[in-house]
Image (spheres, rainbow, N blue to C red):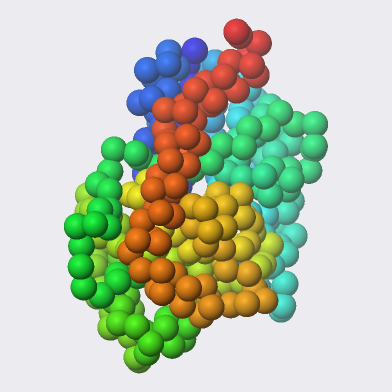
Length: 332
């Protein structure tokens, strides 16, 4: 089976995580997966669509094409599978008090209507697909499992609480910084921020670690507790695919996250991490985790690693993807 995977941009995290890094395990399963970037011109797209006819299936990642692009895609005689890992039919930031975007909704309907099937990052996203009868695979953004793991028994000193993410998302960390500062006033801790931008907050001892693709796994493995706060419970935030949580789990690091969207599916509260309900807030959860110390965090981290191995690695999800593609093509 030949699959042409069309990503948005090679440097985009979701393109790398969900498609580019999935290509090798798919090839090991007999799926010849070629990855190319979405063309920047109509002429380039015309050439791509013409060459795509030699494939059995096109896997189009997250792009919401305009009307002219869709007309070209409709000329393709092989099935298109649309992949997305964000609530792309909504705005990330509200405008006039709403996350709705008529343009995004129209393009999303057009793209999912064109597609023979859909792969998406969680169940909430699957429910956004207008046609409930459309073949759909909930395909979580996978994490590498061959990463350094945190050894709670081998470290000492203040607990290291950490966050990883792009600088554009530091607002979500700032939202819980007051709770972190209040917790730090009771018990010594270090906030380690792994990002492309620095972060500071009064009352917190912050260590800024520059993010790099090569260094991120080791940086995560140095944490005792990993955080995934969100900006809120908006239609866009509900679509987040819990990737920070999964990175922490793969490294055996205990995670704590807002009880929103997929976080509630990945984390079993007080078994493999902690969920932060809106009604209680972050301070109570942080205080309990810090009081439990490294022995309590080690228990959560070990269970999280087992969950990552069972459901969120590349190999297990490559098998599910290959099976979905073969079913769409009527192949066993």
